[in-house]
Image (cartoon, rainbow over all chains, first blue to last red; front, top):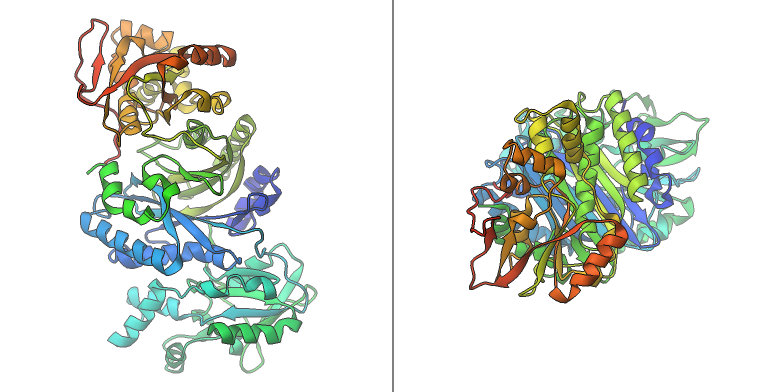
Amino acid sequence: MNEFELIKKYFSKLSSNNKNSLRLNDDVFFDKKQKLVISVDTYVEGVHFLDFRSPDLVIKKIIRSSISDLICKGVSPKYYFISGSGNRKSFTKKNLVMISKSLKQEQKKYSIYLSGGDTTFSKKLSFTITSVGFSDKIIYRNRAKIDDDIYVTGNLGDSFIGLKVLQKKINLNRNLARYFINKYFHPNIHTNITKKLFLIANTSIDISDGIIADLEKLINNQKLSYVLYLNNIPISEKLNKLIELKITKKIKSITRGDDYQILFTASPSKSRIISKIGKSLGIKISKIGKICHHSQKSQIINEKNEKIALKNKGYFHKF
Amino acid sequence: MNEFELIKKYFSKLSSNNKNSLRLNDDVFFDKKQKLVISVDTYVEGVHFLDFRSPDLVIKKIIRSSISDLICKGVSPKYYFISGSGNRKSFTKKNLVMISKSLKQEQKKYSIYLSGGDTTFSKKLSFTITSVGFSDKIIYRNRAKIDDDIYVTGNLGDSFIGLKVLQKKINLNRNLARYFINKYFHPNIHTNITKKLFLIANTSIDISDGIIADLEKLINNQKLSYVLYLNNIPISEKLNKLIELKITKKIKSITRGDDYQILFTASPSKSRIISKIGKSLGIKISKIGKICHHSQKSQIINEKNEKIALKNKGYFHKF
């Protein structure tokens, strides 16, 4: 049973008195009356981050992953809570200094501040981040319309290569390795597009689990399908080079997640304003596909105009 | 370094832009402008609960422990988030059904509802509960006044005996064992006194770590001391019986926490209204000590009017 089925079966009814909870089918909780938006996520060593050898980098990554949930919904995060469970080795003075310094940098960069949390003892290291923002509206999931264009910000796949380098599954020269590892630890969150999303997007999500997994999550309660054009999915020149050298494949690199780019759908009539917003903010926004009637099966089209089959759609939270 | 020192040293400055965060020196976060009160707590198997053999009971205990943080501050919880990390064994269908049923019962009992959360894979089982309420005021920590009386609701110590029975460190007959185990898993949270606290209490906290540990936490930023009268600290008849039978000691049983009773201080002029409120709500409220000038050392006085020394002040979160 995957995460969605599990939540649906056992927990959805528990939020049934509460229209604002989106019946647990969104990455954020929204209380419209109180204008409150909350995201809660847990990050476990060995699952969501490899290890804690670079506490400064891990902390930045999980903070960005958490606030990304709000930002992709049109909400600016205001504060956050951090609960850390770990052992003495994880929370040495040296590590605490590094963690504290990283948090300070992230606070400055994203105008957020620490509001609480706790520290508990555990053999296994994990963090739960709660991010809080205020807004009288959010961009919901499951609001795509037939014929909507599908867009994504930034480039995909660099983060996945960074992970593979860290896992020593891909060997690159020092500079390249550093580039991709940096992309893995420091996803580029587009805070300045947040409020503009209300002008253009019908529905949105951030890419944490991979573009296919998150696209399917985005419309999981709608009777819709999609077509994605692999050619149009944006990647960096450096990743393109690795693909040319057959070090990795495009479809693999872009479907493994950790990108924290914004995936949204918009009416075709918004095409011009979207390209204008992208230019004025200096954010790459790529049109990568279309939302279709469910009578047509979802498909991914490659550069030769062939349908491609996916072995691995990305990261689905399974139990 | 204990939890307070750790937080103070490395994290207090991170909340310095934010007057409402209480500089991380409270159990809740309070945003006065948004009228928002949040508590975040992590519960780890083997630390905060023994094991997961009774998922239904463990879930009730941690939900109550979390909302207790708000209730003791005068705030009614409105919704909660639950993040669970565990393995397949912890989240079998059978356990999920039990967890879901327990949550449903707690929701009904306390008028709260589930608003989100997530599930992640981890070898070690832990839960992070985020409780949210709305209020334009809270009762702060560190607002005791010299000569304030110290009060506590309900009885202390039953929960500790329940834990010892579960750990097989105390053997009792079946009925008695069931009584104490029930007190351990089902702390009696006094929701109906919440709003009345504003009429009487200068400062308040819930007893999670033990009456001494929490009293010291309650006034940890004030230059004050206290005197507690052991005789006046309320315990159940059943616990009193165990003490008479020398199965446990009073000072030990009441200082180990998990009671989730409300500890507060109030001006001596409030004595009459406090007893009136207690009677009208059917809540036992006991006057157990006094707040003193810091020139006098904090002390605990036994039934023979002797000062007693404490070997163990309760549970301090250490790293």
